[in-house]
Amino acid sequence: MVDQAVLRTIAEARDLVDASAAHRPKAWGALAARGVVTFRELAGRTPSEAERRAIWAGLWRAVVEADQHA
Image 1 (tube, rainbow, N blue to C red):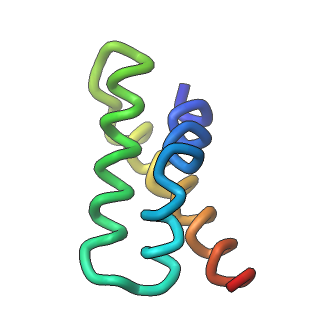
Image 2 (tube, rainbow, N blue to C red; image 1 turned 30 degrees about the horizontal axis):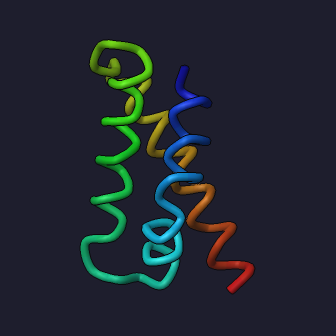
């Protein structure tokens, strides 16, 4: 479920991924929150602490990748 949430968030919020890579203020927080909300929508529950951290890690990898390709 974590991977699904990460992939869906990246696909639906590509602008936030790119804005985070560009170090725009508040973009990372918005992206991280979007990932958690997406997980809730998919799983029907809030993520555990470990799941939340995994979501953030997956999204951060996408940000780093976007930064490397910018």
